Image (tube, rainbow, N blue to C red):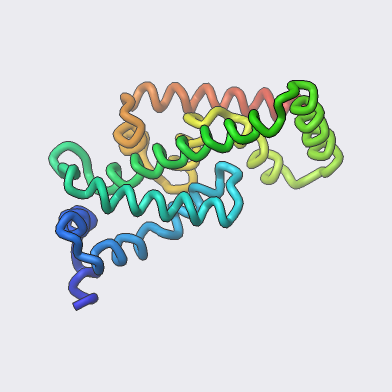
Length: 187
């Protein structure tokens, strides 16, 4: 029976998930687990945090499967949109936790300064430096970079996931590249 599910398209699997077909969600998880996990990790979440976020993504896919309309968007767009929103929610919660943890702005500045000094001392290869700088981009820019370079998605697919036009995605991508160049020259 499980082999039956391997032959199904992502759209068919999501439809079966809406009918509580457990094998369908397992097959979808097998297909997307690794790429989604790596995508989540790019936002500086620990392995445990990333696993929790991944679990939340698939819970939201399961709960939202009845609302999926493949005439409006493909399964890949549906899945990655849920992933993006879940990651953004986790980033907001993490930021609020850090802000509450450090009530005093001076303490937060000291932590940031220490992190920057430590990063400056550690000379890494150029690739590691670029990865670090990408983490300094805003979440929208990071998402576009991760989907474009990490997941080999087109600007059109990314636009569908983000709910933005292709030109907007291209513009954000170009601005992010310019920011990265500036940051590289400053380092």
